[in-house]
Amino acid sequence: MDALDIALIGRLCRDGRATWAELATEVGLTPPAVAARVRRLEAGGIIRQFAALADPERVGAVTAFVEVTFDDPQAHDEFRQVVTRLVAVQECHRVAGDAHYLVKVRARSSSELESLLAAVLPKAARGATFRVSMVLTTVKESPVFPLPKLD
Image (cartoon, rainbow, N blue to C red):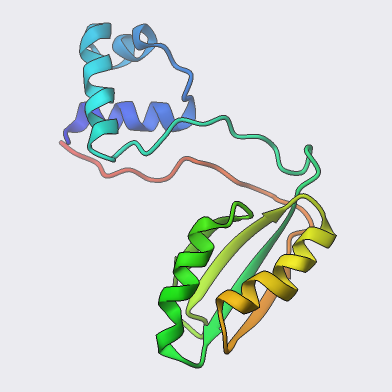
């Protein structure tokens, strides 16, 4: 990766619908050269996907963060396999601290969330304890993150 790749990634994180021509103007390349770079970044797994970001609150979704702490270290693999298949699990992070995992969950309703928390996750994380924080209001959520600075 070079500075042009970083610039393209940054712009696409902010606006995934930017055209090849717009990107080319920003980085000083031709549109076909930009397209080739972006395709290379996709093929290399650096750009994972392009997606529309719907507003969860406007479509009625409820959000919670779940801290998962295991008593049995052998249970981690099964838990990871299950959460990667659950559509309601948007993010799952192995973390340092008191908990082992921090899971971001979005459900269609509070009753669906309750079912997930009462039945699905406990089966996937046998012997684990959960600490749930319900999101009341989202102040900021963004797909943009700090990128490395290359000279």
